[in-house]
Image 1 (tube, protein in one colour):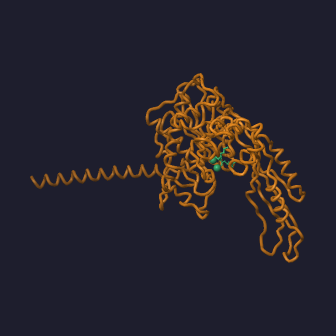
Image 2 (tube, protein in one colour):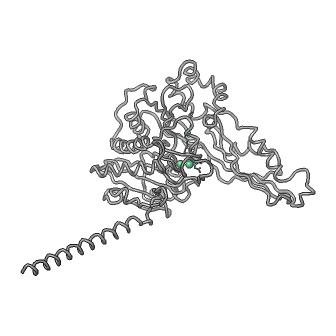
Image 3 (spheres, helix red, strand yellow):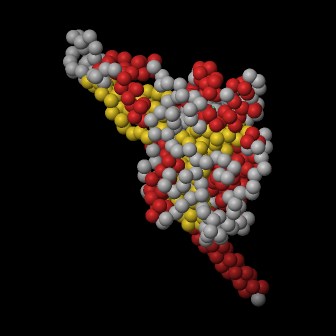
Length: 479
Ligand SMILES: CCCCCCCC/C=C\CCCCCCCC(=O)N[C@@H](CC(N)=O)C(=O)O
Ligand SMILES: [Zn+2]
Ligand SMILES: [Zn+2]
């Protein structure tokens, strides 16, 4: 009897053990297959120090990818469009934009941590894209994830667009997302895209940090310059060859910067809004730009980041020529990238380049270009601007908010048919030395600032639910 019972217990235990093993095996297969679902991977790659693990976005943001309120579409093969339904169809939806692509990065340029390691050093996450523009991709999705997790149902619907080719003009990503929305007859209350940031100690003489919201962006031109001369033996060189001709043209361009236009674009409003935060005499000068433009421009142009607000900037970014040390170069070409001040047109810039080079042997071709973008509203009735501003001031009461012009370009320009109100701003804090990290070495984001970014979108989404703005009782400088 005892022996019989013993065998029954052993049989039972074996059965339970086997069933447990089977359940574990099934669980393992399910988890692994979800982890390696790369088809809809957002490009969110979390690199471990040595073994790279790729985690699918639906694992990190389970609510975003499973909520009945959220529709997810892949557009242009790699870009992402999320439609979040609102309960009140009367309210015009808004849109949050960010991009998942980055510019190249190379560890040998002097990175303190490998540019694709996401290594944390002294409270900062290092990596290409951490402040351009993964912080917003992750910040927006994390905010929506937290909201859904808490049972939040938006009153005002919204869209999230994550482009995959912003750094190469957005022609496949943003352009196609905008087409999808346009074909559905979508109109937007406002758009918030990447752009300017919270400047802390960046603007010389300003007391306290300033959050600059890009209500416009500079135009851009990429111009190809080329020169061709006779191919031949280097022992019998002509007086000039293609390299020398092109180099001289480039020197002339660099030695003749575009005219100073400071104060003739939205930057005038920037300094009017910030004026009360400067000490005398700067306060007086900033409030009277019409008089002090010439003086201020000459001071500002000494710093590359400030110079960007003064004029159309000229950057020679690529130069190619020559094939062998003893062969005369038959062809030389260079690319010049210009960021156009709103007080100038693309055509005026091209005419100026031509007259500055003033050499018919140098061929000029416009590769791509566009004028500066229209100015979005930023008055007290401006819904998008006021919502962004309120969200910022609730989080950072010490900040002065001012409209400005974004000196780089963004995907948002492809959405101009959907709304008149486009704002370019990242809730990223930039301190001295940090603007250089954008497209540069040691790009990084502090863990604290990343948390603030998530909170910013978390609050902004809820603030946007308001039907109409409350009447304002504030004066201009308290805006
Ligand atoms: C008067 C205040 C001075 C403040 C100093 C400004 C510091 C600069 C701060 C932010 C930089 C803005 C960068 C804007 C985002 C640019 C995104 C981007 O890189 N876009 C590409 C797109 C393209 N390929 O056209 C670009 O090259 O612009
Ligand atoms: Zn960017
Ligand atoms: Zn960029």
